[in-house]
Length: 613
Image 1 (spheres, rainbow, N blue to C red):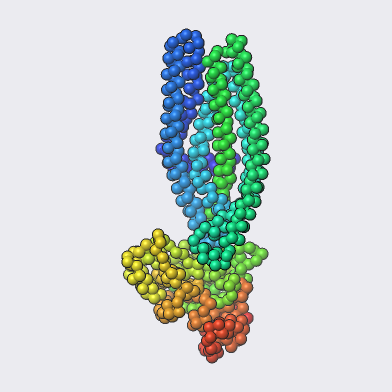
Image 2 (spheres, rainbow, N blue to C red; image 1 turned 180 degrees about the horizontal axis):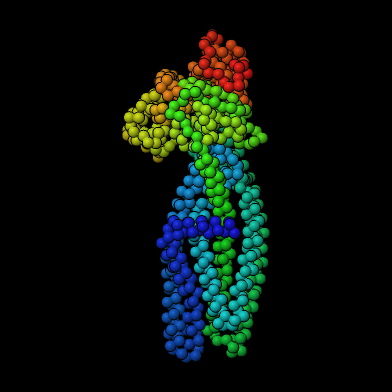
């Protein structure tokens, strides 16, 4: 009952809520068309009986009524189709906005890593067009029911027991419902295989994959895999369709037999003079129309059944967002104006799969004004730690404290307004050059002075001169930038905020040329010192380049999700542990001598660590 109420509420929202006038007009015209096309056989009856009985007035009235109802029905049908198309378009736009709002109303991005959430989201993305047709299917079903009511009434005027034939249509209806169940189960079973087939199609048809596919001669192998997968899906679908078709055919055979028996009964009554020829013709037409109506009921209810499954995913997302919203509303912690003591992680554990956490009992204290470098092999958990500090993930266990305030008690938007991040997998917005940078501080999206200042901090002012329109050059429709240039825009975006509490750069120079990298860090170092001095800003760097890492006040070594070493560059080299091993490998690869292992120890000290492992 609760599900039915929610489904009705969604239908009302997509219809009357989104476009009330369109919904009313489409429903009215559809019902008028259904009545007209269902009543015109009555005009045929009058015309036939008048002709047989030599009643000219009945002939004229029957002909006029038949023509008027038939024309009205077709006109209403065409008008209704246009109105419903407009309603469906508006419902689709509303649904897309609603789904986007539900996704973005959930704090953080952890939900994007959860299989159940992704399953419901992908189903909605696949069927958003189908779901936007909810009002159309409901109006169609209403029209079919109106036609059936008229058919039942007119059949009853011929011979009351004939009215019961209409209910024989329930047989194929219920058979169709039973036949649809295996189809839905098969769809769920094949969803992963279909997704893989779609991915293979994307890879083999997208220009960006072309160079590697041809260089490694992988195209033929991927095509063979795609064919095998498509064949497997087609066979399973064909078997399911055949079983479903046979079951449906059986239902329609029973239905057709009952209707043929009804027509035979009317023919017998006509031969005996108990039924007129006009009533016989009307019965034949009504029986034929009833057959079509029941076929439409089966098709419409099948669509509504699929929509109902999709609606459950929409309701699941609504409930998930509501639960997340309640938790966010409970967050009442307040952040200070600037960092004084620093950021601390206490026994923080996080993972997408509870059985395999990405971070294990991480303890770390970062004093205000400190620059921290995080190093480790790929998969050690560096980016996960960055996203955890950014409030994009919530710790499964433990706490993250900002000047003693538990980050879990702070509303996510309040924390996000106080940080700046350049992610390793940075976004490439199809906006102007200036807006790609200005997104980093939305109130100043079009502030050219602030944008140029941010670009200058990452030595990116040259980007403006490479395009005719400068900051106003639109980066879409074939306008290309190199990977390094896109990364400079991402770094400039992270520099837009003047006084962040936390500035994080995840592999900030991975795509940059050495000369650009050197200029970037010369400019950045000065900015970082100013932010640390004036606002206590903590800077977190994730990098594989030890020329960058060695300048940090504190180096944190991650290995398999655990902090194994912390300290300054010289201190970690003197300890001759995992960091020293990584550094020696890096020096050997790049042909650089190992520097002296002397240097002052940093003021920062990790909580729970004594400078060793």
